[in-house]
Amino acid sequence: MNSVLDKKNEILNLVNQAMIDFENITEEAWNNKPQPLKWSKKELLGHLVDSAVNNIRRLVVGQYEQGVKIIYQQDEWVNYQNYQSADIAEVKTIWKLLNYQISRVIENIPEEKLQNNCDSGKGKIEMHTLSFFIDDYLVHLKYHLNQIKLTNS
Image 1 (tube, rainbow, N blue to C red):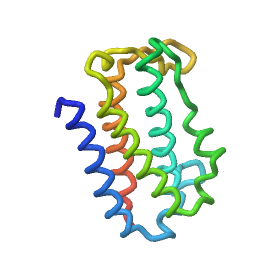
Image 2: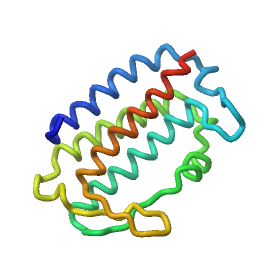
Image 3: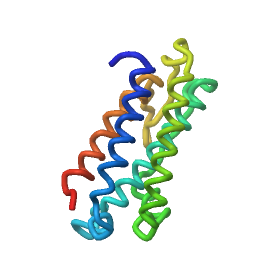
Image 4: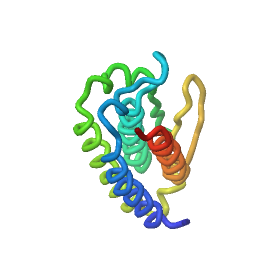
């Protein structure tokens, strides 16, 4: 899968399949924290919401501003948004719609902009291309969706 269109479609397919899979997860399973400092499934999905938000920003701003620094502190984002007490239906809907949006953004990035750079380093410079962020987003999305599904009860 090399083309931007292939990656956009892969994201949409993952989201559509996940929304079906999510129906088999009980409210109790969404809320269960395996350990006090570990995220629940609901918090993992909230983290994927945050990832989508931050990557949309990188992919949009990175098209017109070279080298812009866009980082986020994942634990703080999950904690301050209090996903654990959110309605899971809302978190699922937000996540789905943000992935539709990131798919639209990805599809519309001109080929010549895919090599633009964005800095995502925390406390250091860590430059990556927009193309890298798209690939990394897919890897990250699959990783956490598998985490959510593996302990599917």
